[in-house]
Length: 181
Length: 181
Image (cartoon, rainbow over all chains, first blue to last red; front, side):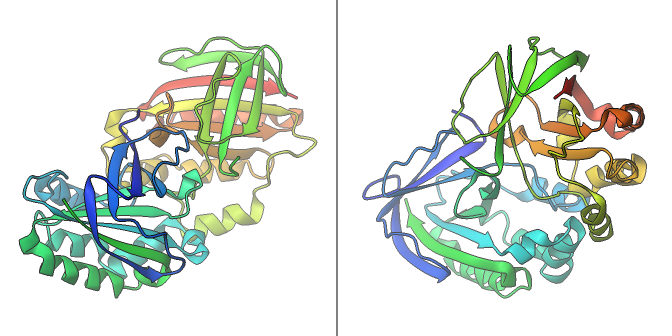
């Protein structure tokens, strides 16, 4: 078991109940009624109907000032009041990955204000990013959001804003799975 | 088998003969006489005396202009004339990983000219970087260099230059393994 690797298993029972599962772009995933997040390891375990694996890594675009702000205001996953969650696996196109670091940063921040947008909704909407691209997984990122039912409207607004950015034009597969504890 | 994951196995026989193995900093690795690089998968296979696993990823610091230069002049591994190689696993300190993206970039390029230095020795000295930090491995990076025997001196110069940079102050474990095909 590693502290950096997590398995997200979709199945007929589990920790989180699936309220809604929608294919936003690209190929769908088989429907499941529950999702469980567990500490994983590098073994390609296939439990449940499907398992997606993601790795916690260092922040790859965030600059000093942004990082300091994030650390000061963000909250961890697992707050008792955060009974709503969203699990959104996404993949970005080859065009995205062919860009250099400064080009990706420019699109993410200067043009799309990804970090600024997420920050607006902190600490109410906790976010966690898991990396999947380099380990042969079907998605590049698994994104996880947790919030209290009262923050459901701001969460929709956050998603709407992100999906209308230039960055999102590079997303070629996206599944939106809403969860309740 | 994945095209992005590689196992480096140290053993008593194998593809590359170990000419010299030196602990530059931190804990040593058990001595081996041969090293073999194979396509791996996520299973934690322990073959040989030790196995180190690394993942090929996108370039995380390289900017557009540098990337275009690199792509134009670098050569792949496996050239028949490149019968000398160096396998150098390194780990960087927590201080490094606590820095933000722009701080790490500043140390690597503005202050240490990491990419510029490597570029000076292209295409003669082919380089490949494998990432290990996020998959629970003992090193953060496995670096691999390949060159013809005639380029052994320039290679020493390249290493000497890199090891004297500000970036290298953050390296807290480094093993230098020289190989011959």
